[in-house]
Image (tube, rainbow, N blue to C red; front, side, top):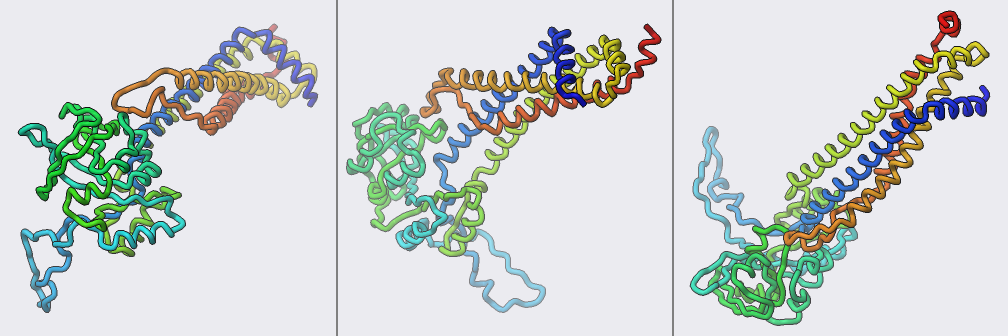
Length: 419
C-alpha cells in the first residue's frame, strides 16, 4: 500500500468535489461548535445553581432535633406475650436545641484531617417590630470570620461591611427583602423580639441577599454573642455546628459517624439537597444528548455526500481497481476523505466553540436575585473539547466506512463494460 499515492488520490477527490466537501466540513464544524458551547453554558449554569446551595450549605450539620423520647417508661415493663403498648400525643423531650459540650466537639472536629473547617451557629426565631406590626424573622448568630471563610458570606452582603458585624456590638445584617419591607437603611436601628420575649435594639450594618427571595424576607445575621443575648443564654450556647469537608462525597458516611460519636443529629448535604442534585444531573444528561444528536446528524450528512461522490466517481474507482489498486486501498481512500473532513471540521468547531463560549461569557447578566453574578456562566472544562474532538472523528469515520466499503466492492469489469 503506497500511502503517499493514496493521499494524493484522496486530495484530488476532495478538491474535485470541494463544494460538497466544504458543506460536510461546515456541518461538522457547526455540530462541534454547538456541542462545546451548549455543554459549557449548561454546566456553567449547573455550577451557578449548585453554588447557590453549596456556598451557603455545610457538608454536614450537627444539631438537636425536637422529638419525643425514643424510650418510654411503659416500654421498660415486662412484656407479656400478645400485648402491645400504644402511646398517643407524646410530647417532645426537654433536651432542648443546645448542643451540649459544643466547644469540645468543635475542637475535636478541627483535629480531624478530613475536616476543612468548622463554623458554630445559633438559629433564633424572632420578630422584627415595624410600628405596631411584627414580622416573622430568623436570626442567625454566626462566627463572622469562619462563616466568611467557609461559606463566602461577604459575597452576599450587598450593602455595608460584613466585618462590622464582628466589630460593632449589638449589630445585625438584615436580609434585603426584610430591609425593604421595613424601609430601613444601613445605620438605622431595628428592634428584635425573640420567642423568649427578650427585646433588643440592633444597629443595621449591612444587607444580605442570597438570591432566594423568600429567604431574604425573613433571614438576618448577628454575631454569636448577640444571638446568645437575644435568647437569654450563656456564652457556651450553640444550636448548630456547620462542617465543611475536603471531600464532599464522604459527607453521608462521616455524618453517620459523627451522629453516633457525639450523640447529636447529623444531616449531610446530599440528603438535604437530593432533589436539587437530581435536577442538575438531568440538565447535564439533556445537554449531552442534544450535543451528540447534532454530531450524529452531521455524520449522516457526510454519509450522503460520500455516497454521492462514489456514485459520480464510479469510473475513477473502476480505473483504480483495474490499475491494480485493491478494494482495501479504495476503502482507505474514502475513509481517509471522511476522517479528513472530521479532523478539519472538528478542529475548526473546537476553536469556534471556545470563541462562542468566550463571547457568551462576556454578555452582561445582572439580576437583583444573584448579586455575585455579572455575566452568563460558562464552564471551560477541557473534557468537553476532548469529547467533542474524539466524537467528531468517530462519527465521520463510521460515516465514511459504509460508503467506502461499497466502493471497495465495485467490480471494474461491470463498470467499464457498461461504459
